[in-house]
Length: 120
Image (cartoon, rainbow, N blue to C red):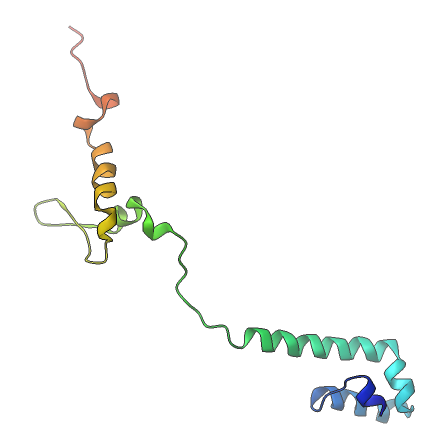
């Protein structure tokens, strides 16, 4: 009855109780009320709960938003034989204009900061 009151389940929790009963020769009520036993029982219950909580977790690809940036797809691009960038088929079509804008920013002809003037 004391095991039922303490919510001791079959398996490791019952084994712990039986070990305490054998090792200490105490009555069930004395074992259940022992703070050390309660601590060990709590640790077993916590470990079981943690295992149950994490057992159904499956690894999935994270979506951090990095793939939604032009920089990601520019870095992933390869150069063709003519030296131009080749983008993969996975490149989102909605990012094409942003990718072109980003590439244009880096072109010397389009940047005011990189223009040279003849000082003579």
